[in-house]
Image (cartoon, rainbow, N blue to C red):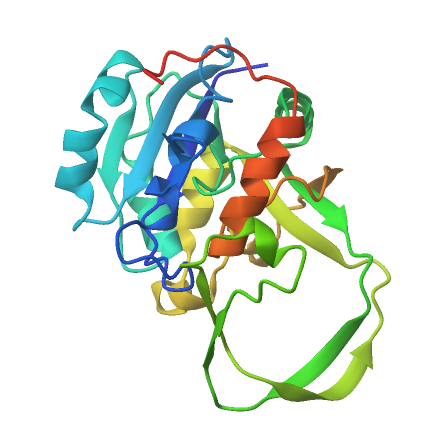
Amino acid sequence: MGKFCVILPAAGKSSRFGDLNYKKPFAPLNNRAVWLWTAQYFLNRKDVAQIILVVSPEDYDSVIRKFQADISINEITVVKGGQERSDSIENAISHISPECDFVCVHDAARPCLLPEWIDRVFQTASKTGAAILATPLTDTIKRVETFNTKTTRKADKSSLLDNLIPDVFEENFSGDGKVVQSLNRDGIWRVQTPQVFRRDWFEQVYASRSHSDSARTTDDSMLFEEAGFSVNVIESSSLNIKITTQTDLKLAEAILKILPPSRKSGFSF
């Protein structure tokens, strides 16, 4: 099936996470950093030849210092990211090992995986050249005109959910709005990671991408679509959440308790 390089982007600003002490990939989740939970799913897989962690330049020294043992024991490559997500991925490309035939990109802040999902997306990408995880949309979708305001919400202890959240919890919201239009959800899917591609295609797409559109590129499959490649979709689960807010962190804690144990990692947990 070939060998895979796994790139874990962790270079974002985490502006919506709302924590002055941690960016979301490095926040404690059940006493372990989020990115360690994420990386463990790919360690000790015979088909994974390399793991690359991409961090912001300002975080590079502190990440190396804090996670030195885990990085060294597991031979994880740490790379400085760029201004936008796609710039960070491009920085990682030059560090990919020659033995890798495929590139897997998985959000470092998406720590709730099942090995079966990874198996399926790896197998499909090996056959077709490009595959991603996603889930069909079940919610009603509306286009909303938002008001140009921002609010901060503190936990309301009258809510059952908020009773699970610490007293110090606060979360930023973009404000309110009004409905403009209801949209048809047929054929609409929520895209996740891992996203896996043939290495030669991956390098070709990034070499030809428009850097002026970096801020618009929110995932790698978007670049492949625009370059004319077909991308196959593998259905996963809504449990495969990406941590964006403090609420997501609490939800991930609950999800990890119900997921089966992952393969034993080499991390010093």
